[in-house]
Image (cartoon, rainbow over all chains, first blue to last red; front, side, top):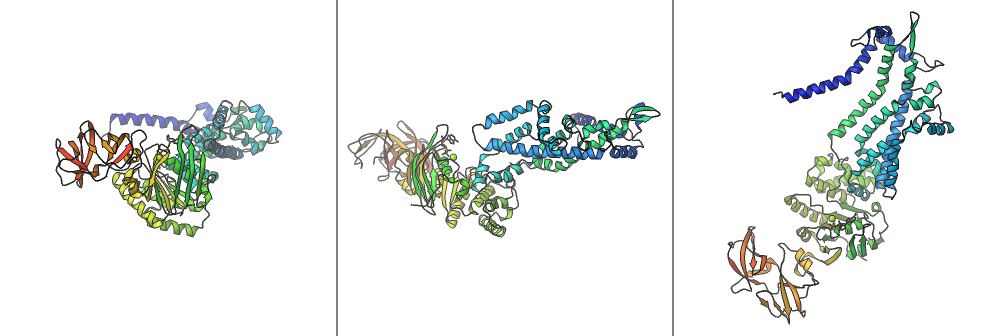
Length: 283
Length: 350
Ligand SMILES: Nc1ncnc2c1ncn2[C@@H]1O[C@H](COP(=O)(O)OP(=O)(O)O)[C@@H](O)[C@H]1O
Ligand SMILES: [Mg+2]
């Protein structure tokens, strides 16, 4: 096979892209296997060190917080639950509201859609005080419900589902109706399976969004048992080394690497759906 | 009351388009009715009102003794085959057929039996596990039919189901649909803009124009006795020839010939219609046709030519005859095989 110059250029660009994506992660991982001090003195590493088990053990099992109650493992689980709840509900709610907007031909559908769309301009950070007030009035501070609930509406996902549903030919609905499908069974038997690629994609985006929340859990939780990953970064703070307080840099890298695992798992798990949807053009 | 009864049915779309005007029609059980008409004449709208996919603006539709104006499509027990088939893309053929039965709460074994029976009837048993995207046009067509048959509905509705197929397959499926309908015996309404399809399939034909049924009857009745200029021009292939003429005291005078003793008391401007197949060559014929083009179909020839100022006049001659461009043919009209229409209203007058 002859290799064209253009192909070589293309591959070089792709390889550069891959390196740009992978190198930071590799450096973080390599650095996380060295001693804290050596990162400070010698900078970040490209090679593996010998402190892997010590650093990771320390990070996973160390009790943090003021009352020394919460471990990193617990925080990963908290974040995982929060992200899972947010992603699941966001996808479910926006798919259903898009369904209502597209298939129930009432006059206010378009204004309501734009109203939903405008909420993109009001992210949680902007409405954080009213949100906090409501959640605390409902007595939901320090609970998973409180962490999840204010974040479950999604204008973006509603928008994407709406655009997708609009591409589904009317005959499909009509045909299903004549086959005795009601509104609910059309949604479950048709729209959900037809949009599963989209559901997988939305789920991943929303999971990562939920997982990386910082401000909301910070305000919402006073009990350490509800701390989340991003908040937890600060429990791995300093250590005393020969009488001086030094930052525990290598362990922080270990924490970062560990915190990446849950979203990676979600992506790996949903990837099958993704690829299936890309190969089979069924619509 | 017959099986399906439409009484003064009118459809006005929200944007003001009046698609169907006060249409009344009765279809008896087991009958194969065809709606035929040009694109946009309202035939789909009429069909969709029977299905319940469009609201009825005015009038009543009765199916099997029940007023169904307000009955939800899912409750009407009608099945429809769409132009693009509307198969369920994410379900395999088996589930496409089974879906309607599942929704009716029929048990698994019965469903399996019914699906297999329908599949056998339509020769799609080998594809039951395939998705629609892995089927050819003709196979999809069969699946769409199977989905209708398997439910054993009160009525089949077809909305131009053959127009996405190539010519050969269309003729084959046309035949199969007719055979199938005779075998299953379900009352059917078939919508098409293709008059050949309409003629070959129909027990009875409704020729629709501008939202009105222009004529209703068996294909042969309509072919032999078109009641209006529109029907005359629409049914029959090649199309009927039309000539301007005058009718006075039972004598018809066209540009260069006359016909006497016409059976009509109408006086005034008319349109004379002659079918290409109702002309015969004879010495000293009424019409002299200057041949411009001959289409040889094998079984017969379509001869196009000019009579004085009238262009594209068509004559169908036997296939064994050799006719060349530039010949002049002398033609007569077969005994009483002409149609005279009031020029202003288009109504038949003879
Ligand atoms: N949803 C609709 N809204 C407004 N006008 C429509 C709609 N559907 C069809 N029409 C109009 O109604 C008339 C009849 O349409 P249709 O029944 O689809 O015709 P056909 O099936 O005979 O081609 C056409 O003039 C068409 O433009
Ligand atoms: Mg139509």
